[in-house]
Image 1 (tube, helix red, strand yellow):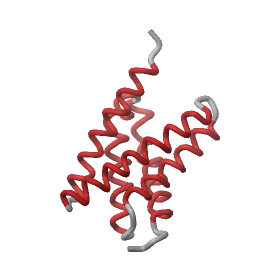
Image 2 (tube, rainbow, N blue to C red):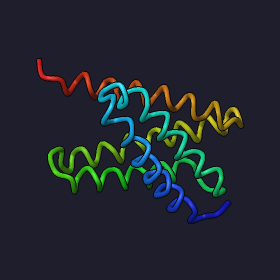
Image 3 (spheres, rainbow, N blue to C red):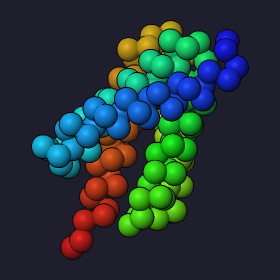
Image 4 (cartoon, helix red, strand yellow):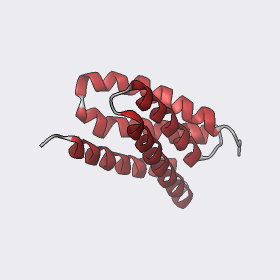
Length: 131
């Protein structure tokens, strides 16, 4: 296993996700946040980790760190959003790593983690709506 390849895996996944998600967010809004972004992000994080022969959970952690720094630097949502990004993507990575070890299938690891991520994003959107 390439010990430090989780860093470029997470950074490449963040860059690819930022580009692809940007195409969908401007057109579909909340739909993209709940249904498109999880597929793009989970596929990118896990695929880059496997392609580079590195840790799936650590690649997800780096992705969450990049997204968290971006959220914090952008303002508006602040450092709390950054910490939530880091924690949630780390949890998705632990789930993806566990599913991959359990099934030895990248497709099942990505699919299972997509469902987890979709549920999380739907919960966050519902909780953030003003009554």
